Image 1 (cartoon, rainbow over the protein chains, first blue to last red):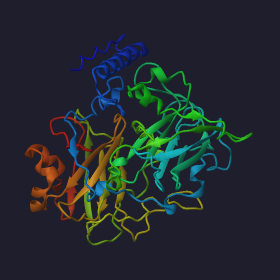
Image 2: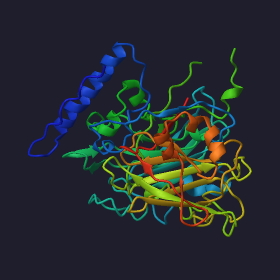
Image 3: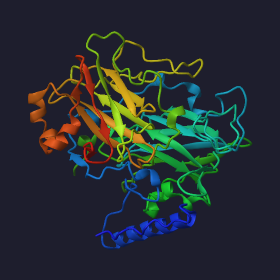
Length: 268
Length: 192
């Protein structure tokens, strides 16, 4: 039985970082207690995570209805994306404008895998991110940091035969948001990933190692399982860094859910 | 080797607009196709307010009941990198629509075929959703097939209604609202 969550305390009607920190600590303690009682590890965040205020009115209260995996159903196939859906320059976010974007140039590379560790080939990965100053090229982003005329922050690639992908971009900056007073999001790149089945669809965010904002961020901390949270953080990889050019980060992505080829599994 | 653990899901946030929506994302049917149907509706939150920053993805079989398995939903121009548009010939079965400031979305598509009760698979992304939500649009004309559908049959009648579109005033027009929370909350699905 989950304990009641602590009330949201406020100072003059303002939720402070200290308030959020207490809520995050309580959520982690509740999760650890459940684990100690034998609950399975949670690989994904809960849909209802009060420290992330936007989840309050947007999470279903009814339990989800299980649909048994069936290779005949359309959800076990997936949209097809091919060479016509991606251009050669889409994977280099620094090459989409006449000039070079400002910021620390990075190479992000990894593999797309399914739950059995098999490469997921020829699938679409889409990314978007803020610029080096923490500003999105989006009219509704009102953060008064400079826009970069040479950076839109959008890219896409298809995975190779070994499930691999490579992106060239710049490291995004941290930025404020209005979840609570003085809320700052750690630097991150948004990833949208398709698998071999529509049920494997994933939208997530990649973070950079060593960011001091990790422990304060309700979105990252919504993943209450420590090991799962670490899987959202890329690793600096000197083998991926390019001399005099870019810093390399390695980040593998593992898709959840039934895959289109589950029935091909060896049941032995 | 031991099986790897999945990468956790995270919210799409509010600023996906520069990356994911594309012009014509809701126009799945090739232009002028005589069988085109319109499926549209609103997304509402638990306070009954429209959700203006949701992203709806549709995935469906063609009229013959089979997934199309052709690329080209979001063709890019190799010269400019810009969006080229669908080729106007192929039905790819994939659509993606951002809700407008009123929380409304519209798709023009072809009716999905069987076997079984035809449906369109829906994936809902939005700021505030730490994990996307799956649901299905079934159609009101398929009375017998819907009655025999294992998913619809497993639901009590009130909840079942949330998965069946309402026929609009014009032939081939259907309304399908998505309620993320509340008394008429849409049935959302998980795949095991």
